[in-house]
Length: 193
Image (cartoon, rainbow, N blue to C red; front, side, top):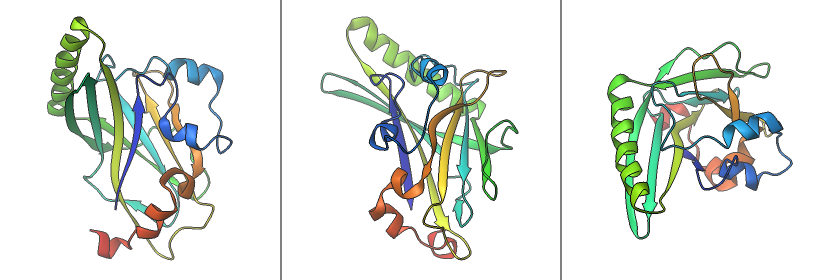
């Protein structure tokens, strides 16, 4: 089962799913201000790191994490998908008891592909208004007895090395993040891979 989370530069400091989950999580004003600067057209791909918090009973399929980049200008659309390479999660990422975090960053080749996309979009912006969105996608499946009804996940992002991780999607129940119909379609790992 594939899952995608999107964040648009046109929505200051709001990961689109957070708006739909009002009351399910909290993002501090400082984090909101920093996230407001997250523009997929200007973020340094070599510095960008992502951490996904995964609850017990759920697994991410290795090799499926990606950033989906989309820019629009009028009726024109420019899309690019880059692969996120798994790496150990930073120990500063908050992880609830029983859950675990998986870290990701772009390889050199994928960072270059993102920079090429950014250069094209910057050219568009020089000629007039254009917007960009950044989505995080990953395939997932159920393990063991599956998820508890209250199982929570989260997405954190680090915009520059040495800075802390910011809650792009604060801890919230997976059913609120993904929706009941998506959760009902998630398969056991042996069937999903």
